[in-house]
Length: 157
Image 1 (tube, rainbow, N blue to C red):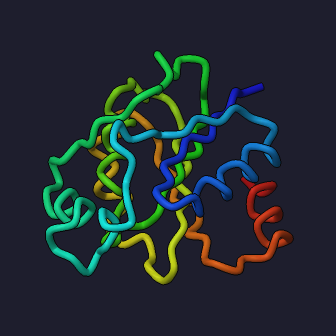
Image 2 (image 1 turned 180 degrees about the vertical axis):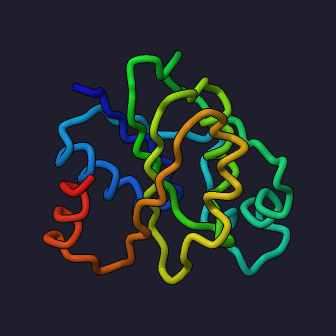
């Protein structure tokens, strides 16, 4: 039996709730991708070009520092990787996380939360950071997704 992990980044708590439900439904481990410096509401103001999130997302080489991450992911075959969609890609802190590990031979199933954006170039931008892994474009979950719809999707994985 393969061992699974739900790893997620959540700036506002929305993705955290989805990730916790997913880990509970799948009966698997969970890991939060925690920024060394938490994001404030001002940091997340995408309309302000000088906000922290805007600056990070304009610089694709940006790798915000994270804390409290697992020493390794060797015991996991499948990693469910969750995040909010920012500017049609994963926040660069997600790259920080996956680049810390050798993901060769692992399956990385993406899931995201978004008020209206789709995947955009998410897979393309994560492929270089997830060297050796098989990336699966999972699902972008919108506000108001029913529990039944969510459970059906998770159980289909």
